[in-house]
Image 1 (cartoon, rainbow, N blue to C red):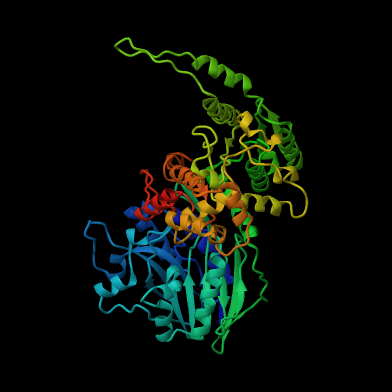
Image 2 (cartoon, rainbow, N blue to C red; image 1 turned 60 degrees about the vertical axis):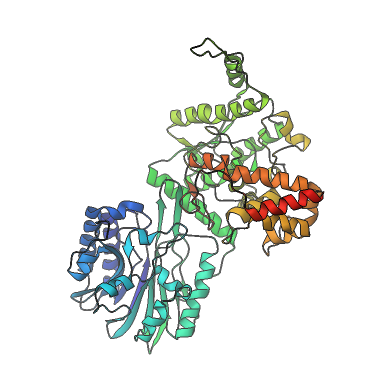
Length: 625
């Protein structure tokens, strides 16, 4: 029996287009003698499309195109694919929830000969960006509604018994119901998992271990089929990377598709075992390479989906804008990229030179627009203003040196970059990294602005790692930027040639903020303070990794508990306070980690909260000093 999975691109919210994509895959498979074609979860509607799933006419169209696709099945050709459907279609009985909405299901459609069977997803994820219980009922709910319903029965296709499971069902060790095990017990000879799962750093390695264990423990071959695509809910951009794979009954990997590449992979099932037609050509890639692929794919496809082709980047000569420029040049082409350096008296010749060298290395467009004159004009217009009220009282408005830092940043973003982008038929970027985004170290309507935050889910140390990766074969990112102290260059206190710069101590604050924001079990403040007192905070924050953070670095910068607590509370208050306000108004972020801001890491604009444990420990420490 010849089996094929097709790793193809799915367009969210476009069932007509997805139907045609799937139909072409089916026609090709039939022509090439395939007996069973397997396509991803939600191959017709797309996935992570929010309350689009609450539009009944959309679901009706999805069902229509799913039925049309099912008609491609013949005596010798079957196909399995994912789609949404009404419970009413499955059972023949109208059913609404307590709120009056029609009940919907995430299902696999098994089209074989002249029949179509349906398998309902058993485990509905409700964490991170996933919220399936908001829209769907699960397999157990269907069983309780239809006593005759078979939850885990496999399907006979060409004399072979296939067990069909959907995405989260493959992570069943975390639940009481164990779909893989139950389906195997029902007699499945081959276990299939339809998925439409977005990229997250480390997920592929974890999945490979889990699915290999399923195959080995159950002594059944496993096929995992994932799709490609991009989903943007307005705050977070998720990249679906594919990475479809297969394991034989010994748990050995026999096929693994590349990330972000469409591919058909064929198998033979004979004598109870699954064999890949082509030899395995797979090597696990470094995480930094996976991040690079994801960002290039995300930028390129976000631009395409938005109907955009040109980008303007404010090139300061700093590491973030330098990395952004290198990524965009690769993703959309150097001819579509314009770098704009916007110096004031605070900008060094060092960073100006880096920006110029970067443009030369990339071969893209470059220009310089000084902002000192316009910033001075703003100061002249504002200083000395005396607004009055109805009582005749007045106040005087004057811009401080700190205010002028923000004036410069806003002038660069909302005036110069926006105007140039408009004139060139382009958009301009947000170059903020995750560390700065976390504490709101950016100016509203200045560097917070932009159409996309491609670096918004990269900690500062990852920004440097990615620059080095881009330079793996030749210098694209000027090497000087990798040794320069990060600086906004908005005042004399941030003069890079004097070794001055940002207030963040990146080797420390990167790891601190990562512990507070990204760890699956986020670090409580009292644990951080206690580890500082115990002298092992660096080991705690490094989380088993070898990094630039050392106990000596922490002690050098915070020689006593008072200075440590002051710094800790300063950044925590910004993280939970002004940082939230700025993130609410920031552009979408390309998700890379397991806690991307927006639809993954969800937060409320509330006051920072300090727990009793932390306040008691703080009081004890400070009273003893």
